[in-house]
Image (tube, rainbow, N blue to C red; front, top):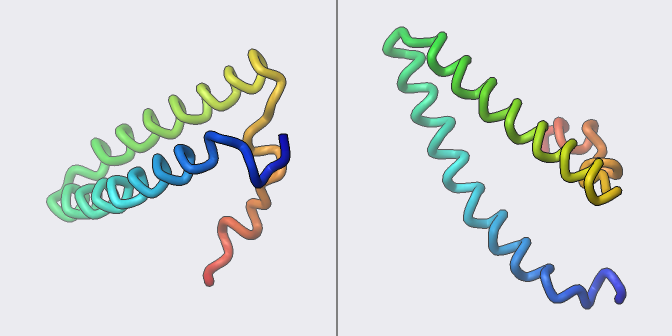
Length: 81
């Protein structure tokens, strides 16, 4: 099966498109909470989210032999367009 024909490509794109607006909203809410003085809550919440996300990526990588982030360029991710 080639990259262009995998049947789950559309599902992946759909899921990511659904996640992005929710993540933006989470950032906006985080900013509001921080402005109200509860920086530690925001820090703790984002650390827990990132910890769980990265833990799951690593676990799936070990279990399935696929590192989803292996070909991701952090330079490209972090560069502003």
